[in-house]
Image (cartoon, rainbow, N blue to C red; front, side, top):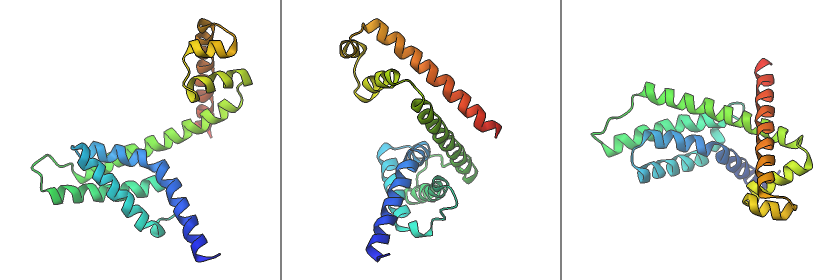
Length: 179
């Protein structure tokens, strides 16, 4: 494989992993750094460092855990540089926060997979209603016009579909937990 091709593939892999991990990293940083702009700067520094050090990442381990490990270091560096008199979190508390965010990230991923599987099993009409409501962001009145129905029946149908999805997700997660 050519060098440029490997570099392009590596950049694409990093981008995909970062897009998945960024919400967790941001949550960690914004919970640890009080100023909005300071927190944004720290998140950007973390993204740059992750990209710079990506060849050190072990793909057998969760990317979000590695990213949070680096995030913890950057948060500590931020407080050292700013020499704030603010309350600085202990290493133990930062570790606990990182662990909690990692666990939530895993749960969100499992819920998203369950949702995708449940959506695949919905009847076509139900998926179409959901697409109109959430992808096209149409209100019930517009959906009613588009489907030759009434706004009230659209709201009832959407409520039933969301309920069915919720039940399906809970069943799938329970089955996964039993494994």
